[in-house]
Image 1 (cartoon, one colour):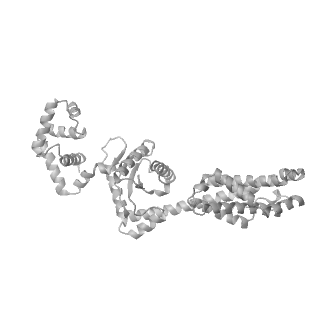
Image 2: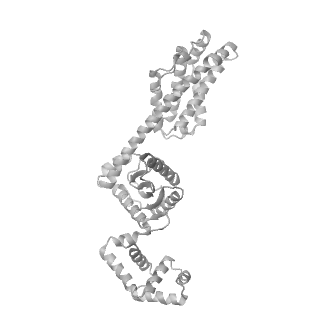
Image 3: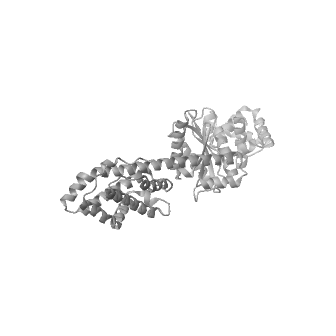
Length: 419
C-alpha cells in the first residue's frame, strides 16, 4: 500500500472553513450526482461496461472518495490505511469490469476537480475563505489526490498482473486437456468456461509459424500479445475470447465461428485475416487454418489440420495462410493406404508418356483454361485437345466429371508432396 503523505503538508482549517466543510459533508447528493454525470459523459468505459452493477459502483465510488476528502480536511490528516482499503478494493474490481486504468484515473481527476469546484462555489464571494482555499488548502489538494491516484494505480496493476497469471494457468491447463486428454469433456468445459469461452460452439484453429521464438521469454510474450491483439481486432472478437497456446516456434489460436456465419465463410475469412497478419508482422512467417470443430476433440482436430495445412506449403513459397480445406482430399487419401496406392497407380499410367503428365499438371494448375494451358506448354490448341483426349483414354475418365477431376488433383498433390 502507498504510504500516507507527510502530515505536515496539512494545516488545520480555520473555524469558518471548518464549519463550511462540515456543512457540505452533510449535504453531498447534488455534488455527487453532478460528478457522476460528468464521468459518464466523458468516459465510455463506465457506460459500456457489461458489469450489471457498474452504474451503482460508479456512484458508490464517488461517494467514497468525497467522504475521504471531507474527512481528511476536517481532521487535518492525510488518508489513513483504513480509508485506503476500500479504494484499493474498488480499483481491483475495475480490472474485471472492463474499465481501463487510463479511464479510471481520468474519472478520478474529474472527481477531484469537481470536489474542488464544489468548495470554491460554496465559498461564494467570501474573499477570506477564497484566500484560505487558494493559498492554504490548494497545496494539500495535489498531495491528497496524488496519494489516492498512486493507491489506485498500484492496486489496479497488481490485480491485472494476478489476473493475467491466473488466465495463463487456465490456458495451460486447457491446452493440456486439448492436446493430451480430449476425452475429458468435463475438464474441457470447466476450464473453457472459466476463461469465458463457449466450450461447445465451433472454433477454428489457426497456427502461426514464428520467426524468433528462441528469443527471451519476455520478448516472445510481448510479440505473442501483439499478435493475439491484432488477430482479435481483425476478427472482431475480444482478446480474452481467443484461446492460445505457444508451442516452440508456433502459436496456436482458437477463434470462434461468428454468429450467423457458415463454416465455409469462417474458413475463408480466417485465411484472409491470417494472411493480413503475416503481411503486417515481422515475426510471423506462415499460417495454417484448420476446419471448425466443437469440443475438445473438435478443437484438437482443427489444430492438427492447421498444422498439416501449414506444412503443405511448398519449399520456397511466399509466406501466406494455407487452408486445410485446400488439401482435404490429399490428406484423406494419404490416410488410407489402398486409396493412396490407387491414386499412385493412376499417375503411374501417365508416366510412360511424360508429355501427358506435364499437360495434366498445367491443366489443373491453370483451372482448365485451355488457351492459358496451351500458351504455357507452347503447343497448338489442337495438340492440347489431343493430349487431353489421350489422358481421358489412358485413365478411362472424362474432364467434365467433377469427381474425377478432384481425384486427379489429389493424386498429383500426393505425388508432389511425397505423401
